[in-house]
Image (cartoon, rainbow, N blue to C red; front, side):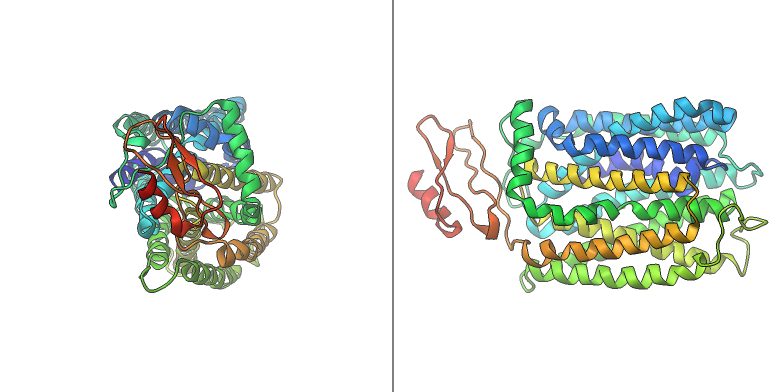
Length: 476
């Protein structure tokens, strides 16, 4: 858990600070046009790289992934600061900065996914992700306090230079934190098992491995709509609701509560999914969790329609709604909190579900890469739709409907593919006495491993999982 917490701290200083700016809407800018351009660049680049980011992670390791992963966030923040002064003249810079952040984000989130899914024991996967997500969202909470304090009495629509500079410094500090992480092969779980890593692959073998996983686990494509939907809602929440209807200090205040309620949602779902594993099977918890998510989707996003049905783009409230408004503000902050609560529950369930399919960091890095790739592809599409000035009602309905459809598509994996115990994949072991046995197979079967004369493990196909212990004891 200490390694998961450290990765959470890295996200706190990088993605968390970026989330605070995003939570204020428009990257802290009054005119959201340039932030929309930046987000299209971010998510398009993110989507292109993230599909192969698991391969890169397996090749270069966690430290380099996370160090580079934080750098792009600082670059884009500097672009927002420049845009606040020169407006559309900064278009080229903000698009390039968005591309750099997209590359960085792909590496950071893939490494994060591999750590939070592969490092914990099976009965702690929900809590491990909740711990990471809480630290990450605390970055958004504290990051939201910075613009609130520095811009409380400001009449400007943009954040001040001091606010942007504070964010940049914190993000750059976060880029240095990965040096304190242990290499993955030195991590020992609480049950004294080691994280299973493959031997150092070549680029060719890694790309082949990616394709092999996609073929072996071809049912994973039924989760792709779930992946695509997982960031779709941010565009409406942040740009079309928060940035469009509220004053700057209120936008930041909303962002603070958004990040806080997001943490609550993560813990609610994480604790529920890890609840009494000795009594409730993992498949039962997967099914109940997905049904719970569907009910919340219908209730929360259905309730939010009240605030959307009469909203018109290019016709914002005049004056903008401030947190001191006794009638207009309270119901809007309540629905905003529930949207963010739902976000945390959705993300927690997604990572728990992927983690229930394997324990191996190589396979999970591919899952995580696909998740972030398709998530970003969906986000690039919806940010582009926002840039085309699609009506707010259409933006909202697209969000609501894609969430419902994605949950229905995920039922195949949640109801029939979750394993009660997912085994580590085999790897060759060079060190004398180190033994990793078992590979994930459909239905939970596991191919036992034996030790050859040159001290490398080899697979004995065709034996059932229950025979593994006997095989290992006999061979060793």
